[in-house]
Image (cartoon, rainbow, N blue to C red):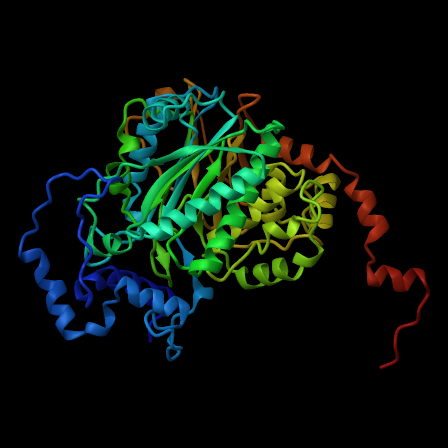
Length: 545
């Protein structure tokens, strides 16, 4: 009998060739308004022999995208009838991947950051999964700091508008169900209505130019229409940057819930990112395909100061466009093995959650977790909720979700121990093994959980660039003579860049700073009851047994 990991890899090896046996008419790579295509690539007859022979021998192993959707929803796509139970279980949605980051410590936007990020991603192709069809990947993507100059040019060209100053506008990449103009119109109307209700201005939509000529049949079958929405903070009452981000968060959450109620949870409508600080380009792609597919990334004027990259190997799960990473604030290497408990606790405390900013409307941000998301998707959703709906900083939210091994740890200060003990009553650890890279535009960083089984290394160069990845050798032209600092990410430790202060903040400094903001030690002493100490203090005799 195969082990779970072996079975997962066997599934990963065969799943993407399911498109070869698709019974419905295959979707072609015919031009659409948002696509620019190159001449189709030729494929030798020999490369098709093995998949075709396998298809004839074991047809049940080759799943079409429609079949995957049936397995996820447990219902027939046409009749709606409940299907017989299969061994597929959405709760086992996990992934082991390649993760990396590139950033300018001085916040200097350059083409070098984009090129290095792409080079890093491509060199982690072995960390991503593909099937028998090598052009069908498990997923890959890149998250960038907002490329301000590029977006200004494109907004002028496509919409005829001049964007407000940086931080006063947002751009979001949105997936829409393919080739369905009615659904496209309805989904856009939802986002526009919610945006206007929150006092912000929709400047317009821009189709994102793509080249799908290199994609395999499976990603082609489910390829979404991708468009960018431009939103300005120019309402009657101008919002602060933090409140602008909060309202964008609210709009995204409400739009997704409304669209899911109208179309279903696996409809193909998905907002990759909607913020003034970052933008995400991702999909059911191989690492090599990301910059080839999204033509924006190849534009020489597309420059930025930070990037996260991710190459996905989905374990015990099916690939899809929306499950690719980076997500909205993070990307992840490993798996969350406490996921069921984490989701249950987040759901159970939903009725008690309250935000000073959102007040009685806090419920609009819930639920924070879902069985329709992978472990990384659930982690990202909770991280975003904590960082945007509360007054917590991003490093503090990460500390709560991925704490150090603080119990019986004599190397930790009392301040940090009190922080972890107090917050253990509010948030359970999301235990891996896992390495998480994260950013909100103000910070970029990474942390390794206390198990320490997903190592990564980082480099700081003499020209103040920062490189971190789950591999070494991802930037081959980097010479030792150009490196100022190199080290590994240690278990329970955090690597953090603060763009406002333009420096790397040491792990002890940021954690002591966060832990000292409130008197956690006093709160623990006043509010927590230790049963053993309580029985001693009240002189209660032990029960006779």
